Length: 374
Image 1 (spheres, rainbow, N blue to C red):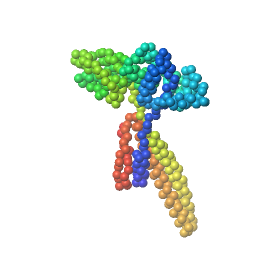
Image 2: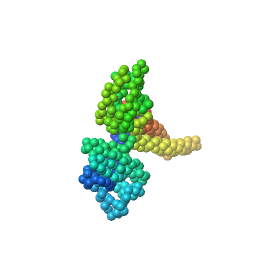
Image 3: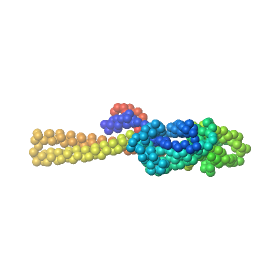
Image 4: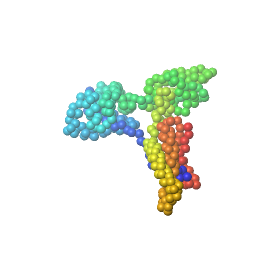
């Protein structure tokens, strides 16, 4: 009964002190975007747009231009300010700035058209991670989108994707994109994880003519496709802004991200395992001491030498026996709890099961119970 209460109390503590794990952000800095064939005002405008779009990128924290200049203006960074664009000195600049990634390059212009020749340096490995050369339109309404596309290609090309939403008024038709089956109609959500460009779409169902066409995919946009499968005809094509929560990654192309396990559960699991080991040691020592005292009393009784002083020995022996039993009980309970917590941690890592903490009330008292399913 005591072990059950202890397990329930540990479950309560785990539920109270559990905290959500926040995804880490990567610090990134833009440094010395050299203008080529541009006046100062236009160069500043393009850099402002570039910084604005970089600051909106999920998973990254952009260092301000003022802080970058302030750090590099320090006397000890005089050599770094003379960097000509080599990867080694750029790596030194990134370390001085305290960032994980550094973007640098040239912004060029000719009339109303611009080019970005940018490279991304990974500071941890001190290597040029990626480089792009993009031509951008000078129209204001197109320039922002072009800069955003260029940044995603440079910094997070894996997120430079769009999706296709398919509307077919027939159930049970197989949907195939680029020779990979992605589902059966009706699809619950648009198919995401598709690189911008043309993709081959096929919709096949027994007894009907197969539909096949090339469908354009745009960055962060859902291409809505309406198909009459009976006549194997494309009825409509439209575009709308992509909503990430409504997009299903394409099987075998966009792999679902694995959720990080809970460090709190993991610490509790190892702590419980350590408690079990310590309890086993303590129980063994207490049991050994109880046996020594029991043998001492037995030997005295065999020789008819029991005296009133041996009552203290008997009492101590009983105490050690009780401590030994309690220790073994705690060891067993802690071992079971550690197994449960390790299972819960594996479930939180996407191991294929689910774990739920629920309240429970028994005659021994109230607490929390951990339920899991495979």
